[in-house]
Amino acid sequence: MNRDVRNCRRCGKIMIYVGIPLCEECLKKEEEYYEAVRRYLDEHPRSSVREISEATGIPAEVIMKFVRQGSLVALENVSGMLACEICGKPIKMGRVCPECAEALMSATGNISRRPGGETGISSSRTQSKMYSMDMITRRRGPRQDN
Image 1 (cartoon, rainbow, N blue to C red):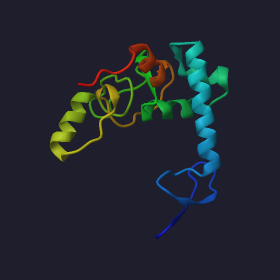
Image 2 (cartoon, rainbow, N blue to C red):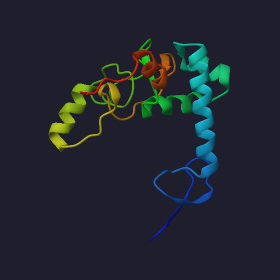
Image 3 (cartoon, one colour):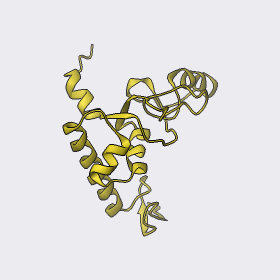
């Protein structure tokens, strides 16, 4: 088994790379950040990135990373917080809108899709209202698969 040694993307510490660019300590810290954001959103739904950041002390860039990963969803694009990197259309999470994702899929043959039909990552701005995907799932109830 060949092990790849890299530096942690956040702290620079040397680590054995297992598919995640963060060391165990930074990964744990990131999970703590996510839990703090999720708890805050449970108590204060529809808060903006700025409000969450100020209340929790978690940097806005980290919160935006959760949005880009699809862990949090921007319900309103108050000031164009997230926009498709291809056409500029407002999106709730990811990097590209569903239409551009479809066009990319047909051109390349494969793009991973996220819940809600959106894909990838986008640039960070700070005014959209947020929800955690956990909260949305709980409100929708159990999924009915056929």
